[in-house]
Length: 118
Image 1 (cartoon, rainbow, N blue to C red):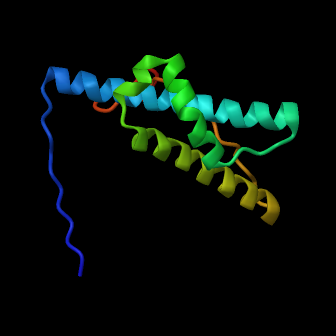
Image 2: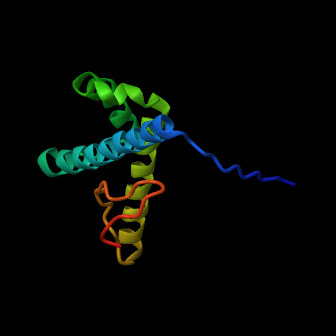
Protein backbone atom coordinates (compact mmCIF):
# COMPACT_ATOMS: atom_id res chain seq x y z
CA UNK A 1 0.00 0.00 0.00
CA UNK A 2 1.25 3.47 -0.84
CA UNK A 3 0.70 6.43 1.38
CA UNK A 4 0.50 9.96 0.10
CA UNK A 5 1.30 13.00 2.13
CA UNK A 6 0.35 16.52 1.14
CA UNK A 7 2.13 19.50 2.55
CA UNK A 8 1.13 23.11 2.11
CA UNK A 9 4.05 25.43 1.72
CA UNK A 10 4.08 29.05 2.73
CA UNK A 11 6.99 30.63 0.88
CA UNK A 12 8.19 34.04 1.86
CA UNK A 13 8.49 36.78 -0.76
CA UNK A 14 12.05 35.94 -1.97
CA UNK A 15 11.21 32.23 -2.19
CA UNK A 16 8.04 32.97 -4.12
CA UNK A 17 9.96 35.21 -6.53
CA UNK A 18 12.57 32.47 -7.05
CA UNK A 19 9.88 29.88 -7.77
CA UNK A 20 8.21 32.21 -10.26
CA UNK A 21 11.58 32.90 -11.88
CA UNK A 22 12.25 29.15 -12.18
CA UNK A 23 8.85 28.61 -13.80
CA UNK A 24 9.54 31.44 -16.25
CA UNK A 25 12.88 29.89 -17.24
CA UNK A 26 11.21 26.49 -17.67
CA UNK A 27 8.59 28.14 -19.89
CA UNK A 28 11.33 29.72 -22.02
CA UNK A 29 13.12 26.37 -22.40
CA UNK A 30 9.79 24.69 -23.24
CA UNK A 31 9.04 27.19 -26.00
CA UNK A 32 12.59 27.13 -27.32
CA UNK A 33 12.56 23.33 -27.47
CA UNK A 34 9.30 23.29 -29.44
CA UNK A 35 10.75 25.92 -31.80
CA UNK A 36 13.96 23.87 -32.28
CA UNK A 37 12.00 20.73 -33.12
CA UNK A 38 9.70 22.60 -35.48
CA UNK A 39 12.57 24.41 -37.27
CA UNK A 40 14.63 21.22 -37.61
CA UNK A 41 11.71 19.45 -39.26
CA UNK A 42 10.74 22.34 -41.53
CA UNK A 43 14.30 23.21 -42.63
CA UNK A 44 16.06 19.85 -42.69
CA UNK A 45 13.25 17.32 -42.48
CA UNK A 46 14.74 15.70 -39.37
CA UNK A 47 13.17 14.87 -36.04
CA UNK A 48 15.20 15.76 -32.96
CA UNK A 49 15.17 13.29 -30.08
CA UNK A 50 15.08 14.31 -26.45
CA UNK A 51 18.72 13.20 -26.15
CA UNK A 52 19.78 15.51 -28.97
CA UNK A 53 17.88 18.36 -27.36
CA UNK A 54 19.39 17.60 -23.94
CA UNK A 55 22.83 18.00 -25.51
CA UNK A 56 21.84 21.54 -26.56
CA UNK A 57 21.14 22.66 -22.98
CA UNK A 58 24.79 23.51 -22.10
CA UNK A 59 24.98 25.69 -25.22
CA UNK A 60 21.72 27.41 -24.30
CA UNK A 61 23.05 28.02 -20.79
CA UNK A 62 26.07 29.78 -22.27
CA UNK A 63 23.79 31.99 -24.38
CA UNK A 64 21.40 32.67 -21.47
CA UNK A 65 23.24 32.61 -18.11
CA UNK A 66 19.94 32.89 -16.22
CA UNK A 67 19.21 29.28 -17.26
CA UNK A 68 21.87 28.26 -14.74
CA UNK A 69 19.49 29.32 -11.95
CA UNK A 70 17.43 26.18 -12.59
CA UNK A 71 18.74 22.65 -12.02
CA UNK A 72 19.71 20.88 -15.23
CA UNK A 73 17.50 17.90 -14.34
CA UNK A 74 14.51 20.22 -14.21
CA UNK A 75 15.24 21.55 -17.69
CA UNK A 76 15.74 17.99 -18.96
CA UNK A 77 12.34 17.09 -17.52
CA UNK A 78 10.81 19.99 -19.47
CA UNK A 79 12.27 18.50 -22.64
CA UNK A 80 11.04 15.04 -21.63
CA UNK A 81 7.49 16.41 -21.38
CA UNK A 82 7.75 17.89 -24.87
CA UNK A 83 9.02 14.58 -26.22
CA UNK A 84 5.99 12.84 -24.69
CA UNK A 85 3.66 15.49 -26.10
CA UNK A 86 5.02 14.86 -29.61
CA UNK A 87 4.77 11.07 -29.15
CA UNK A 88 1.13 11.44 -28.17
CA UNK A 89 0.53 13.83 -31.06
CA UNK A 90 1.92 11.39 -33.64
CA UNK A 91 0.07 8.47 -32.03
CA UNK A 92 -3.22 10.34 -32.48
CA UNK A 93 -2.31 11.15 -36.09
CA UNK A 94 -1.58 7.46 -36.79
CA UNK A 95 -4.84 6.35 -35.16
CA UNK A 96 -6.91 8.86 -37.11
CA UNK A 97 -7.96 10.88 -34.08
CA UNK A 98 -7.99 14.65 -33.98
CA UNK A 99 -4.40 15.56 -33.16
CA UNK A 100 -3.46 18.61 -31.14
CA UNK A 101 -0.01 19.92 -32.02
CA UNK A 102 2.01 20.85 -28.91
CA UNK A 103 1.52 24.54 -28.23
CA UNK A 104 3.79 27.28 -27.06
CA UNK A 105 3.21 28.35 -23.46
CA UNK A 106 2.38 31.91 -22.51
CA UNK A 107 3.48 33.68 -19.36
CA UNK A 108 -0.09 34.27 -18.18
CA UNK A 109 -0.06 31.17 -15.98
CA UNK A 110 1.70 31.77 -12.69
CA UNK A 111 1.25 29.74 -9.51
CA UNK A 112 -0.99 31.44 -7.00
CA UNK A 113 -2.17 34.11 -9.42
CA UNK A 114 -5.00 34.22 -11.91
CA UNK A 115 -4.54 35.83 -15.26
CA UNK A 116 -6.58 38.94 -15.93
CA UNK A 117 -8.17 37.31 -18.99
CA UNK A 118 -9.97 34.61 -16.97
